[in-house]
Image 1 (cartoon, rainbow, N blue to C red):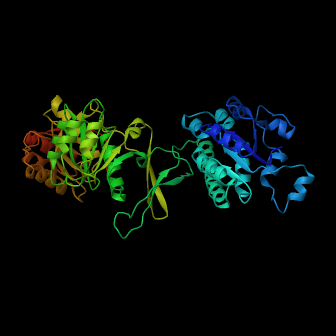
Image 2: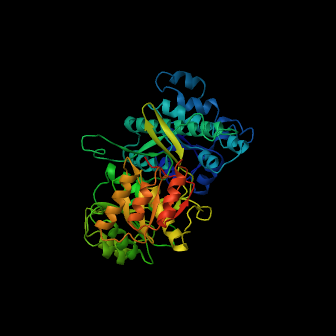
Image 3: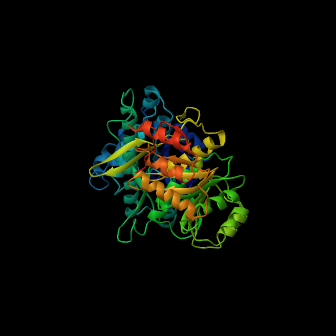
Length: 515
């Protein structure tokens, strides 16, 4: 028997054959079974089958393979204290454990039933990993293919794995076990649960990106992704300075907003301090950008700009040398990247992977003192067909389309939100005010200050109008159509004011508060 032994049992076989070649070269006898043993044998690597090693066959349809004293003992025994007893029991040391688990997360995510869930709960793998991690003073445990290269390099250079490395690997192993068990617990808890939300939620996060500070320089900060999820931290960054806390906040807002627009219609959204300050759709991406920036050129200084199509060279040229903090798009033409990189401080993010998972069901949560608030993501705008015209004057087709466009921005604007649009160009934004009439005044002023004529424009309000004053103010500015949820005890008065001013008004039945 070789002087050292490794047990290898992996579902994800990425890189395992190359790693085992290094183990074999370094004198390790490799113990394996099932699909892993076959994959290694097919790769020309000598393998000792678990059943040959233990003297017991696999049992109960493969449920029992590695649950044996020769395996558990070989991993767990203290090499100094227990050496005599191990020799008496003919237990050889197992020095490396390479294991990853059945894909329970993927099975649970597709909505599998209880039978399939149970069959995908790994028992032997986590047992070996826990044992090896506990005995890290003597055993190295590897649960992630990403760690193969470092361990292989250390073995080839020194012939052993340092205690520091073993400890780091052990921490990763316990983290993996904790996450795996939490996923199982959550999935089984949700079986036949009447309440849409589980009684207990376990969220695992992993550090994803370094941050110099938080919202302000005196606040320390770190960025974490939910373990196993695609996140904005995974965006490919082509150039620019390190992303900041506020960059990520605004970039995520920009991404959420731009995903409202189908990829077959060029769209651009501009975000500043978590609120839209520009937006448009147009026949070309370049026109969409130019029109979006025209909404509020001053606010667009140092903004975050998102696109829903691959960014082309003409659009990049239109952006010129303007100060833009972050640009997001689902890909870039090489010529566009060349132009954009001329301003080296710009952060250029490719968010293609996030567009690919845009339709996945998501939840929102935010911390409060001693707990968190948890909700479904606001995924709707409103049903244009079901929206109810409540005024005498009925909005025309173009006005309906423009109001729906405006409501997409209202949905992503801090309440109280009042959005004015002409066609599919944003021209005025009133955001984050304590009263809706103040937001209305701001939206109108923003539009007129930036040279837009509000006569004939439309408006969207994220929530109902509590009094007729908002509608009257909009009518005074020439707004001809308004979309709002309805539901105020003063709806009749607001409808009466709309009719008196000749304004078309629809009730969407859907509120979009964003605190």
